[in-house]
Amino acid sequence: MNTHRDVAKVVWLSVGFLLSVVNAITAETLHYPLMAGPYYRDTVYDGNGSVKMLPSDSHVCVLTKVGGHFAGDRERVAVRVSNDGYWYLEATGIQHIWGSAYCFSRTLFTGQDKWLSDEYTASAEFDCSWWFLCNRVLPEENWTALWWGDAVSFINGIGGNFEYDVDEDVVKVWQAVGDSFRSSSLWVSTHASYIWGLAYSYFVGVAHSGHKAKFVDPQGNRFSDANSYAWYAAGAGGSKGDYSIRTMAPVDKGMCYFYEIGGDLIGNNFVSIEKEFRGGVEHWILKGYVSDGYLSAQANCFAFDQQ
Image 1 (tube, rainbow, N blue to C red):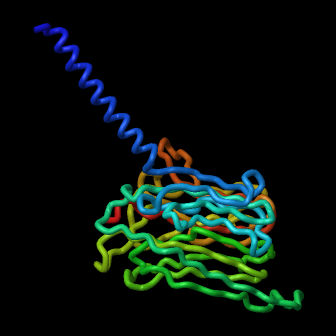
Image 2 (cartoon, rainbow, N blue to C red):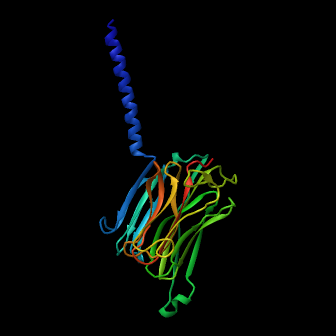
Image 3 (tube, rainbow, N blue to C red):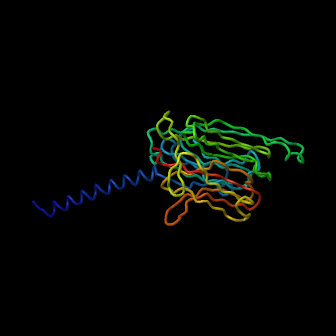
C-alpha cells in the first residue's frame, strides 16, 4: 500500500467534492440570486417592450425608478407578473420614459406564510373643456382595495399624463396601519387628463393571527407602523436642477419600495430607489431629480424579518 498515493487520492477527492459543492451553490445563486438588479428599460434606447426578470414563485420584484415625460395614456412603466409566471419590467410610450426594478428572493423573508397577491389597478380620467376654470374644479379620484394591513402593499406601475403643472396628479398606496384586518388601498387622483396605477400586496407571517407588517428605519431597527421616508423637490425641500436624497434602511435589512409618486413627470425628471454606502454600510436611498415643475415620491422599507 502506497500511503502517499492514498493520501493524495483522498485529498484530490476531497478537493473535487468541495469544488462540486461550490459550483452547485454558485450555479444556484446565479440562477436564483437572493437579490437581483437593477433591471432597466428605456423606450428610446431599448424601444417599447419588457425585460424578463425572475419567477414570481421564488422572488418578489418591485419598481425602483420612474423617469421621463409622461404625457398621456400611452406612457406607462410597470413591474408585473405575466402569464408564464415570471416578473417583467415594462416600459411603453410615445415619449421618452424609463424605469428600473429590483428582485428579492422570498427566502430573504422570515415568516411562516409567504403570499403574493394578484395585481391591482386603478385609473381616473379628468375632463375639463373650460381650461381657465379647471384649477377650480376638484380632481378626479378613484381607488381599489388591496390586502389587509398585515401585508405590505406597494406601487409597481404608473402611467398617464403627469405633465400638468399641479401637485394633484398622484398614485398612492394607503398602507393600513394599526389594524391588521383593515384593507390598504391603491388611490389615484388627477387634474390632467388620465392617470393609472398598479400595486401588489405581499404577506409574510402567520396568516389570520393579527400579525402587523414590520418595517425598517435607517438604523436597521424594525417597527410596526409605516413611517415614511419622503423626498420632495422644486419648492418643497429641494431646488430645481438639484438631486435630493433621503437615506433609508440598510440593504441587508429590508426591501424598499414606492408608496407614492406624484407631480410632474416631464423632461428628465425622475425618482428612484438606489443603493449607496453610508458610513461603510450599504443603504437604500430615495433619490430624485427635477429639471422643471414639481415632483414628489415617498417610499418605505419592508423588513426581511417578519417574526
